[in-house]
Image (tube, rainbow over all chains, first blue to last red; front, side, top):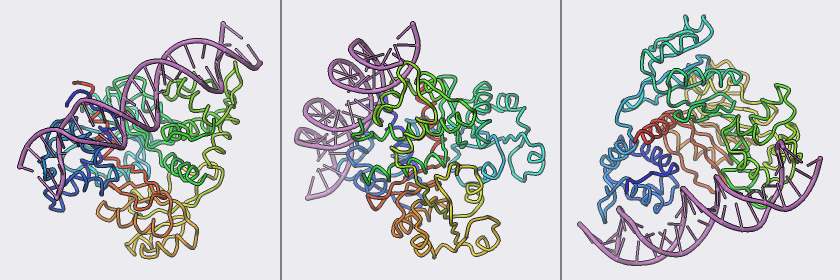
Length: 210
Length: 210
DNA sequence: GTCTGTGAAGCAATTCACAGCT
DNA sequence: AGCTGTGAATTGCTTCACAGAC
């Protein structure tokens, strides 16, 4: 255990973590790998194998304690520290995102927003500080921001990403329908393109019916 | 070739397709696998291998024609037909999504929106038809909707998903921070949870610095 | 020389199956 | 009996390396 966690395992841990948070809110105290399978669709042996990478936490014969497993995942994935994030692009989608209930448990905090349109910068009603886009480098460095969310039109996405990376951001979530490439190998990128996801679903539907 | 396309390949095709659309708009006529690597980060031999699953399209010695490759992907993934989609949850995020420029080339069309809040249903200003949530089953069947987008609070997400699947939807994109499980093996789900993606990035950042 | 297409090799992740604990 | 943890077997993906086309 605890050698090198495979990336698919890391991603599954992140889903399971979410699930554990929700279970905890519902007052559930224990889960077995079979119940986790029932709720996520991930086979129970895969879940047990995953958990084996971060050491023994289960109670043999009676499953996992929700709180303990949750904490164990948190510690092993290095999530036990609040990270600062910023968002670039405060159009309809961007401003929708910052009001979405995602920042449970002090994991992340969106501390700044950027937009190239001065009017947006002035009129947006939000609790975070808003700046014009040309101040990205300054603000990111000054505030120690580690994560960036991109919600600008596709043509500008790579340019914005480059600026964020240049300023020291280490992880980017990209909503623009454009493929963004990391220019530094210490910065990770997750593309979250709605059109792309619908396309993946369509393709899977198409395959199935061959 | 054309046996069974591996799922990671399907997903890469969907990104490459997006990239090809953007290149075409810029007037680019040809690309080599090396250039695709440069723009996506996916190694050129992986790209060539992927393309080999859908048959020969490249011009030996001089790369791929953008338009031809794009069309080839479209045909092989079964994307050459417009599919109807609906969105459930028209809060800030939901209404941001429907105005996001994602529906290029007649691949998808969002034809209906649902919200449980009657006020939202009445006041939202949008070009799509809006209905109260209890009409999901009816409307989905009547309009022949194949895809669903969920943007409701986490506690309601699985229930909404179940209703969509019940009505015959074959693919769901879920924005709620809750793990949604497919109850039918002919329905595919893509979870697009912003908090989850930030968490994955944080975990990767953490691993790196071990 | 340049770049694609692909069998073969190598590697990583999933699945199996069972030992061991309660 | 019930459920976890894990080496071993298996599957499936990626990478290699080179033949073949231009």
